[in-house]
Length: 299
Image (tube, rainbow, N blue to C red; front, side, top):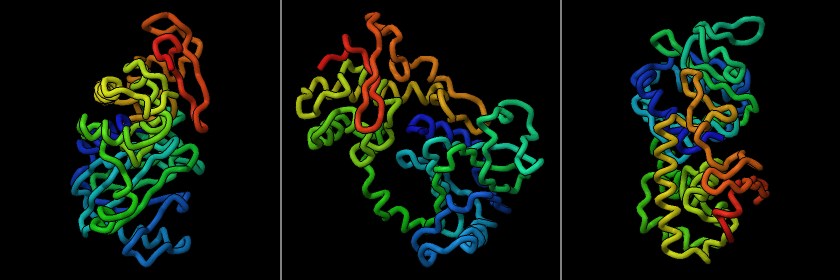
């Protein structure tokens, strides 16, 4: 699932391509991903829901693109906000496609032709004859149209913790101390801190030399500070390298991010630790995997 660095990379790329562009039409073959939220008369049944969505979107200009946690927000004219959460395998692409034998084929030769970029289920046609598309193999992505003011005051936003890149050391320590549980799970709790998921929690804890199963109640101030500093370092480096493309995530150009080549523990089970040479281990934790060095990260 795209985490903070991947979403931030997507935002920065799209700002150079679709900001101030206008939606002229929309296509989908999977309207179930569309939601009309508060201010639109509740949940409208399909296919009427998609037709209403299309009616509301057409003619709206993209005035701002921003990130809230792992959510991409397009603030539109008409006081509307389009929220896209890419979920497990979704990623936004920018280009030109044509319909061919029941599927979409990129007219731009290059990375957009890669198989992982061909699961197009939603296309926004823009006023510059280009398209903003959502490729999503598993079709778990969430697309919601909101009244902007209602989105800002929604339960979804109010329950989110502070952004992992904006939180201060003081608040970081305070929020973690209030939560009971294993540190990896707490780092991934979006209500505690927004933006960190499975990949970066592993990498942050390795950098800080903290075992993922260590209870937050047993963490000393120095250890909490180490985790905070590691989070800032890892997330900023991942943004610099435009995210991790070890699975489905791609840039809007269809290209891969480069952070995957510098991962130290995530998906490195049985490989040698870059610090001490010990074999990296993987354990299950709440339905997810925790990768760590048993020598560098002791309980």
